Length: 276
Image (spheres, one colour):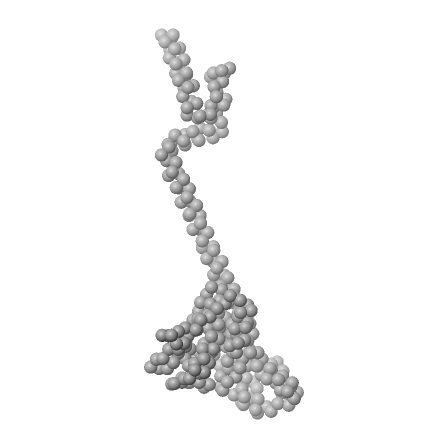
């Protein structure tokens, strides 16, 4: 009985010793210590876990494991995408804020009862800030205007920092009244006005149009006392006629002059000084 047991144990040990190299592909038998294999993967750190994982996966599960890794990488990329979107949005907001801070009062022109920003200056400042800015005059059946039952319209689209904004403008006269049968010059003038407004949608000179939709009874900000004193001093220095000055700006007294007109008034008085 004892002998049989020894033989059985010996046979079992031999079988185990032969099978182990087949599983690990790396174990080397140690003849001096047959009962302890120090080079076996089973005795290395994490060796057992790696061996068990290999058995669990099997040869057919290798592709599935690689696919799972690809899915995890795609998930990580998707989680980072909102950050890229937020940065792009921040960039767009910054470009608008930059253009909105530009003081355009010096380049405002007066025509009739209304003030206009020079289209040439608006384009100049826009392209200096964003050289890749572009604009497009929209065509309607091949012509740069649209004729409707209520008048003629033009449209201009301006693209800044990858953002395209479009403005539609009616063909108007110097009093901002629709022209029933405009000529080529009047259509071209409206296109330039439309271009300036489309640029304003991106921030440059936008504040000039703030009064267009004021609630009934609301008034734009007036000159400060310091600004009034400054203008009064200039009027006296250049010998300007106060009545004509006030009449030009359509106000009864200096205190009624809108604050937005201050710089333009200063420029007009300085021109008179140089011309004297």
